Length: 563
Image (cartoon, rainbow, N blue to C red; front, side):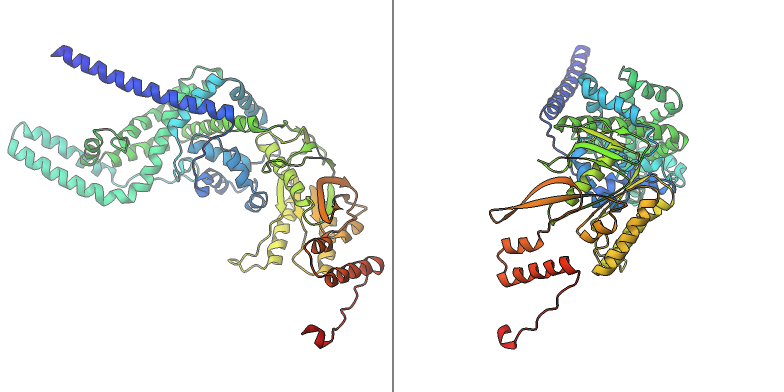
């Protein structure tokens, strides 16, 4: 009989070990295919969930400045983030999202992160070990796991001792069975009914917190696994669990209690769930985890951020592999931004451009010629340079600065703002940055286009002059040729151009020095077969204004010709 039991135990251990081995082999195969092909399947993550670390960090620090929401939206940075997001855990996603928004003009953290990018790019064995641990941690929306060290609220359960007393009742009833079967079973039945009632009466109020706290426990488990990796770069994890974070090990234990019978697919799931209910283990374990985090809050914060940093670093290394060309940025103290063969990160086959930009730059050109794409590619790469030390160019040099844009303005119906009001509020952000003497590079697309021509040109020129003499660099794109004349002594002019070939407008999407000297709006009317009388009249009006700076008056047509 003893031999049978021993053989049974050996068989169970063998099956479990074999399943783990096969599972890890499959994961490794998938990881290697992703790394080789540069293609991966990204899990859907809610934007509000992914941004929780960024929001928690920003809300608890009134001096925290990064890429604001208008700039984020103007530059489609959410799409850039999703293209970069090769992370395997929710912690990694949240950390990477924050990293892309957390510009630090002091530029103090680049070297450490660059070492990680290089390490994970070159050391396949280490990278795969880390990724397997991060995959086991996984992704789960709305865990808000960073709230336990930012804006932390005391989530401890009131009167927690009552749950411990109730949990002891079934134990006492089982002991009573040995003395009186009748009274013992009756006591056990009553204890079961009471605890089931208490469990379901209070479980709903704790449901969201349990969802969050079980992920916190998984983070601690992942940290313990990372601490077991023998590598010079991982000594910090080992130190954490030996010193300040030693108490975090309790979280791992209580986390396993919370996970008993939780959709693992095992044959004993139902039994384990009844055990959790009977002994109110969810409430007791939850309260113990919260108490432990309160005691070791700094250690948990350090563990969370180190785990996120590793995951984000692998994502950056993966992104670099997908690029045909990239460079590490150089940084200078003078207000200058120069680059060679710069590409837009969201375009599949981008036309590259090279420039040396000074303090004040005005870019003009015809419709669809490439102005907006150009300034957006410069702005996005200025963010990437300062957050992930990566630029889609052959060379890049800039002064470390905050990046602020005023581009895709929309009416704000909720606040009652018209297009023009929304636009001038957007521009006021830029002025405020400059007034606060912060290093800034501002990007403005079609300045003040929400008002009439005379006031638009006048106000635009005044704002441009103010920006040119105050702190920060400015890059403006505009259709208004008048601005090139007004600002020619202060702003360096560049332009995009087009050519007409076989009745078609052809763009080269290349930037050229000097102001724009071509217009294509009327030509586009001709290409789309507008009536000749319209295009002829438009050309005549434009020519008259160019020559004498006066608009012609419309001719009143006979009523019969309008019928």
